[in-house]
Image 1 (cartoon, rainbow, N blue to C red):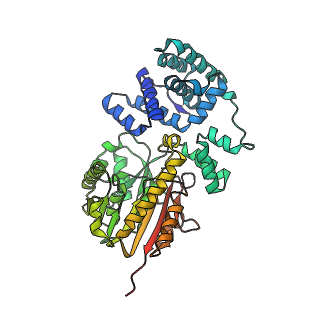
Image 2 (cartoon, rainbow, N blue to C red; image 1 turned 180 degrees about the vertical axis):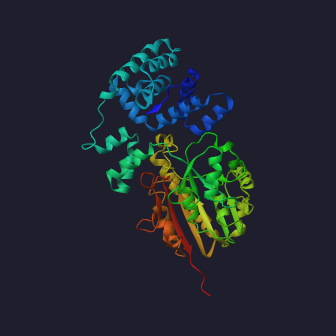
Image 3 (tube, one colour; image 1 turned 120 degrees about the vertical axis):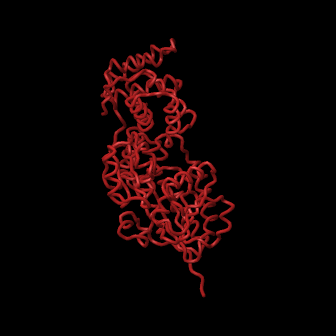
Length: 454
């Protein structure tokens, strides 16, 4: 339980209330909303910390919080409007996960519902009931109804829990995964090999007040002891590092990109993997970065300039037609459901649907078919997602291979046995899991295009 015995103005809590309303009813992204709020309004560092913890904490533990509310009081979640419900959720989270006095929580409940004379008394009585009874709430029996227990206690939608149980075949593993998804992830950064190395970066950050530890699997990563202000450091301004989860670093390395090669990052986004590819290639050869969003490609170019990654060239989807059968490696970091990054984006688990999975899988099949034409004979096609979903991972790859007998699946260890031997499953695919590796959940498949017979 985190300490919160500092002065926090009431507008911090009303801001949390507004954010939750937007996120849960309007499907808005919390990181973007919070960033915009902090740019427009002044909050102390303590207020920022509390605001972020409340928003993300409630999103992570939403089902558990709602269970506590319903079983500690007479409130019925389905009957409450968002303002009232989210006010009670904020107070319940404070009662169950933060070190806040009962008096402070009740005062907060009264203040947040002050404009609703009709329901203000109801909010106060409900929060008082939660405070009295929160330690006596009975959760579903873990042994008798394990799925129901995981859904409620570890706050995941039932269809996701059932899907993972079908695919992972272990209720213990599903529980461990869901539990880990509700733990705040570390801030992992990647050294820019074009400008520094991990040891030098570690020392430079220590001088600027940021202690760090080495990542376990990637030789390029550091986990910092704090997040606030890290983008204001000289180390960042000078392009010595980028924020990149260790799992994302590893799937970038899965390309086996070498100096002098032509490597295409087909779904580059803001360019985190493109930048790392440039570093792995020592700025020699070409990285073609493509994305459907011009804004993301503009941001990528800015980042590349700061990083000194001069072998990156951004191209449109149409411009890629000039490179048919020319690439040594094509990386497809496909748009996906993001079920491997719930610990970073807990809102997405409440918005995602089974139909979304089906639509994404269909799109992924189109993408891998389209961009595979860019691979030269003997070249590599690397398909990557940040999801834990067979429909979007293995099924997409096998579907592609069944229709394209000029590509062969090759085991991840063929790229680097020392690293990828720790992540390769029985089928030869790369899989990183939050509850096993303390990384985001990534999937990676390496395929090689057959060489033409002479």
